Length: 254
Image 1 (cartoon, one colour):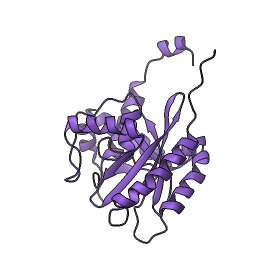
Image 2 (cartoon, helix red, strand yellow):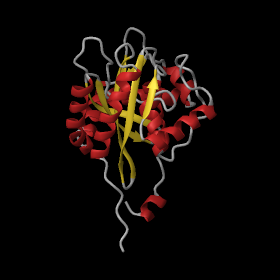
Image 3 (spheres, one colour):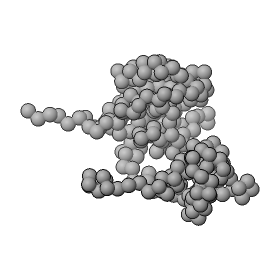
């Protein structure tokens, strides 16, 4: 797409409103009714009703007959899997995820940054019966997850101004978060110790290219097993894999 075309292009309001409805359903922990979707998106009720009817027809949204409420539909899973199949970095990183899980005994994850945060695109589950369960498509929380902190440290993303506490250990002070992000830049990896969920610990490291942050490798596990000592041991392994996957900046000519 040329710069001239980009300048002429204008977003379609109907498409933007449909996307807003999908985002609202994705962010909700439960099903939503028509009026609640309208309230959250700021779109009038009749327009929301027409958008939902169209989205339901193509199975991007499902209407729950028992309640009349709505949730994301199965068609989005198909589209998401098609998109993930085209993410080449999954193929590159898969052997490294398998090696990390084999070495640490914990669940390893691959996430990629996007405008609003990071999202998990692949993982290798721990072989232990008690383990951290990863989920493809799960977004991070910038101030409460190791992958989210890596994004803050290695991109020009703005520091979040709202820092809700998910557990007693979540960082909720802006200066404390800025200090931790600075430390992450110095040492090259991040951690989250019971900050998003009680009893869940994680570490993460950046995969870099000349263009910046390409991906994030992580290791996560239950605190009773993946405690400070195990995390310290896993950090060296994690950073080694991140370094191997990273592309060094191009060298300047003489």
